[in-house]
Length: 103
Image 1 (spheres, rainbow, N blue to C red):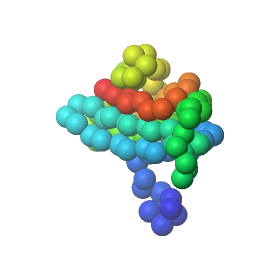
Image 2 (image 1 turned 180 degrees about the horizontal axis):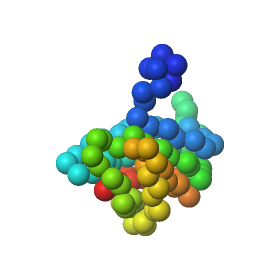
Image 3 (image 1 turned 90 degrees about the vertical axis):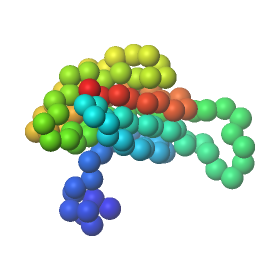
């Protein structure tokens, strides 16, 4: 996929498990919605299986420098490192879903 897109995909998430990711841009911030699909199949899930840590890197819009990242479900702050227009952070664990706001 990255080869076909000539490595222009603005999001990289690395870690164990199956995670659905959606990246949104709003004025002055970027939102990343993560859904843990690990264990989801054709039968109803009886319990969620946490995955993590997840290493996340996302391409920031031009002119945006990320200084903070907060998780809206867990209510935690995450350290952010900016390198060459990419914000890099680590999500320690993902149980069911999370929204990370990078500003």
